[in-house]
Length: 366
Image (cartoon, rainbow, N blue to C red; front, side, top):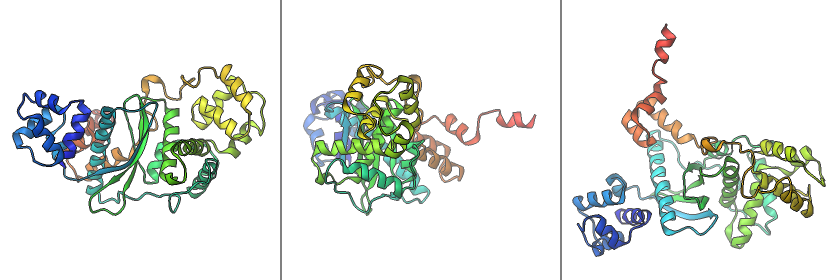
């Protein structure tokens, strides 16, 4: 609805009703904008154009009629998020989901094919049950005990929609459900912030997967977060595999050994140490000593990142949406300009993605 779109875009822009009216050169009053947001009146085409310009969005965005809504959006943050931050995130996800659904409709694909490993949301008696849940999910998905090479690809294969995008620094990631008018099943979505290292993004993905599986009513908010953290550690670093690699009991750990283990499991150094404690390999005193010596500073700065800082957000990215767009383009179900619109990329770049680099054909014929 136009009402929801105007309200969300205004919050993202950080305008009050009066400030938006001024940004529109007082084309309409603050009271009129309030009526648009409450659905009490509809802006004319001229006002709609002025709104789009002032808010920095397209008219198509304001007019979109898919009627998509979010539910259960829970931000995983370092601190409380502002209304502006939340609006910015919601708009980014909303636009992306709409484009995703457009290309799926063109290809006549089932958007809601989520291969949930549990029949219903799992009620946990305690946070410790999260480890058993992680083991169960690994078994249901036939993952064995080996480390997961690409967490993003795994979740996409199982039907979750995953978005890696630049979010406000305070937002690590979140999960939500997307409701569509006239559709039975909601779409599960996980969003992660590409500002953070790959190690942290993988943990966020596993953490948010836990929120898609755990019945929040069985635990308090704090306990649910602890359970999700435990699930993430157990899912990415299985206890039996870890104990096979390092031994069942250790009194000390060296710097290079920890970094090598971090690369094996592709998790952060601090998360690896916490997992060693959870698995009973080290005790509290060994954990504290490690954080004060060989792992000093690891809780705030990642040692030897798997993904160089200048390439932040480029590895283990969600690829399914891009593949679907190029598939529809190759099958001539959408035009080159439409593909560029969906992918938010320049036409020449999309054309190169379809045909290959210019000169590739000529070099083969020489």
